[in-house]
Length: 589
Image (cartoon, rainbow, N blue to C red; front, side):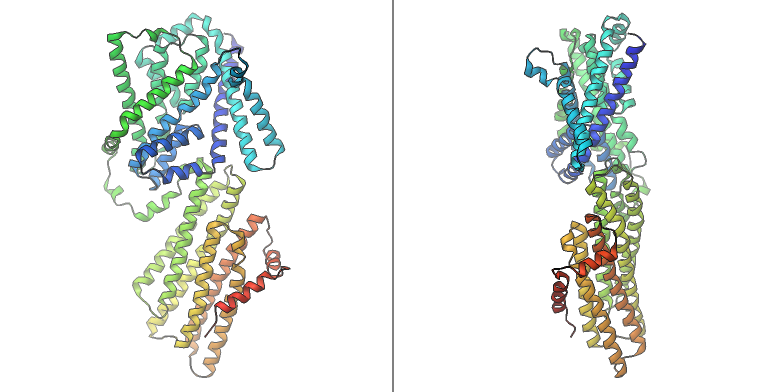
């Protein structure tokens, strides 16, 4: 094996690892967070959790990525530790799918159809299709599919390059002697563990072992302990990810380690104990890529079947290793709520966008609830409820800060067109939701002023204010629905209602002046009424901003004034028909 063969070997390894990374990222992007949402929501049943963990890992081609996501789920409180265990077990099974795909490289046959199954035969075709999708299509989804196909082709080309580069080693006695040393179970496990820990992918390290099979020097006695070590080494990624996480997230990483470590120790102990009595002859046989895939799968399936009924023991062992401190017990529920904005999720942008949406929905609901509570205080003031409005506003402020920071980080990631639109909408809209909660506080303070002065509005003024308040509550609810569904059609209903709220506000102020002239009201009460109506007007303006933003981003329009002109001067006069409809719905007494 000369210098240039070594260059080919390392070049093939680089392409193999890069192809695996590109293909995995493309698969995760195409899934659009759907697989992760399924994983999050459907883990109540242990068997279902195992199957889902296996399916998600098989699709995104990385048990490490799945386990890191699970650590993030547990850290953010989305998933309980008991639910995470099944997913982690399933991830170990799912990761074996890659070794089965790579084993196709070992197909040797003169049959035309069998030769078609060989990756060296079909990967060039996939590469060409992928390049066509990347270069000649505009659809973001087709481009993502093209990325997957090119990634797979690069992976398989790297595999073939590695296999070709190491083939001459079959005639090098020194190489054979080195491999023989790994037939020692402890040395073999150590080698597998270190290799996987360094490249942080059991799928990749198993692929490297499969590439070495072409030398004919890899025996079962060598492959078995190395594969066992690879299962231990893959735990390093989750352990590193758990640094800085809460105790439950650290426990999830420890469950992954204990599952693989104890499973490997028990399997190896039983296997070599039985071998000591029966002396398995097959251990001296050479192994091929398909047989390595079998060993990899059989171990993980057997380990899962054995551990699944005793998953509670794994949880207890992890809890004994990572104990709760008093500080952890005192962690506030509010802090836990904000942990859905997990930095770990940023590595899977599609899912991070979904988590951002969840946080934005919570923020919008909190803002809407603070408005409802504030309006209920006008004429029926309670200090306890007023304090709740203040706390809600502080919480919305924190959402704006943390979500804004999270979305800015997310905007620098490689996002699909739809996810990019969603991030842009959220970045524009969270400020408006925060301002709605600010105006809710202003209304609450006006209600407090009335209470402290022992004053109140007349029955007539309260009825008029009730109509305006209901219109504002309705526009906020409508805006929340538009934001939640990003529904451009529904957004068209916001502007007519906002126009009506402006009309109602002006009419309320006009009627107050009439009562003032008639001596039925005071100037001081007028100031309070003006403060409340102004806050309600501003809330409607922010709702309009949100509706316009969603329409602009979805339709790639960026001139707000032009957009509003188009809405109000549409040829079908739909704006004015809708305005007449809401005028009939909200009539002042």
